[in-house]
Amino acid sequence: MKRKQEQGMKDDNTFGKILILSGCIMAFLLLCFYDTYKKKGDDVLNKLQETIQTDLAKQKEAPETNETKTAKKKSDGKEKESNQQAADEQKQSKEEETQDGQAAPGDTQTAAPENPLIRVLIKTDDYAGEYHSSVTLQCSSDYVLQYGEATEEHPSSEPLTITGDSPYLSNGVLRIQPKGEDGEITLPGLKRGYENPSYLGNFEIVKRDAGLLVINELPLETYLCSVVPSEMPAAYPLESLKVQAICARSYALKQMQNGRGAEFDVDVDDSVSYQVYNNQKRDERATEAVNATAGEVMRSNGEIVDALYYSTSCGVNLSQDLSQETVFASFMTTDNHTAYEATEPWYRWKAVFTVDELTRLANAWQPGTGNVTSLSIDSRETNGAIAKFTVQGENQNISVEGEYTVRKLLSPANIAVVEQDGSEATGMSLLPSAFFYLTPNYENDALVSYTLTGGGYGHGKGMSQNGARHMADAGMGYEEILKYFYGDVQIG
Image 1 (cartoon, one colour):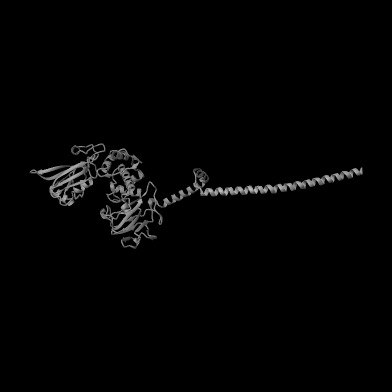
Image 2 (spheres, one colour):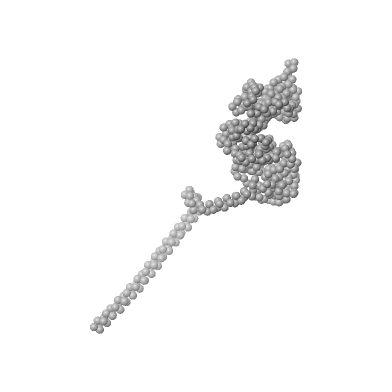
């Protein structure tokens, strides 16, 4: 019995040793497998990292495809929204600091696309020329001078006089910029419709061999607030002022497109050569008309209309063809009391030129012409304006083309032009219009004079300002008035 117990104990010890040995072997095998697979796993991870880095390098070198752009947009969307919000806040802050186009000192003046900056050449006294011998300015606020790389601040109490030899013009250009958002620059002594005209916006003085150019740069809508009251009396009906605002805006933008003022690096000047600017002070009603039509222009076939306008028509409208001489003369002599401007003084007018006066004018225009023997109208535009005109002289003839040239050749400076109400206009440098017909006057079969029977005041193209006034008085809205004068245009 004892032997059997000893044998059992021996067997138990052997079995335990076997279990321990088996555990050791299993542990050893597990360690071996761990090291092996860990090494393989590390190799796989290393290869994966190398592949990713290679792909990233290729993406940096390769141009973006539509797919990569799309993926990039998706991943960057939130960041862009955040950046855009910050940019919008910065823009809003900037706009609040630069109302009416007045930039902070040292900043470049900017404007929205629908309200671009316009550059206006300020002509000399009474619009006589482009070049000034000197310029004196006074600013209502403190102002900044920029010339070359230099910038100086000056108090409003300091007027500024610039001549051609000024050190401020050592680089050829001086920029004057008011610091206040409502700062105005005054040009004391400049002869305009009101004394000491003042201007919003910035100024540039440019030195050239012929003298100094004075350029006013400001937002288009601000510019228009000084055009409308200079071109149309601010007391006219509001709808007619709106018509004027849209015409002036369309015209200005068209000039900015065609580059007509490139010789002086401007878009327009401030005279009747373009449209009159700041010859009268700004007016609340005119400004209201500009604001009420902000950004609105006329377009035809997608293009901005070159919106010409003038003072008074002779009653012709777009549907009439007055190119034939007999048709035109009949139109001018037939009572037409239904015309909107029939009561205007310049609706009809007369002027009598003696042969002696015609001879003087002809020889001043073209020396050697000799005594004038006759006048002839060679052709008319569809609206009736004279297109070609001839003065026959004893020695040679004078032939001119274009309504303006005809009006200039027959300058009534030394005679009276009688309006239909009986009043007389004297000292005019141009005929009121080229809408006239000729009547020769004879004494004893000898030509002694010509009577010009005409109508209207101005070139006769586009909108008649007095016509617009009477239409507005009759209850027509600005869009209806514009389409009467310009036809089937889009307004907006």
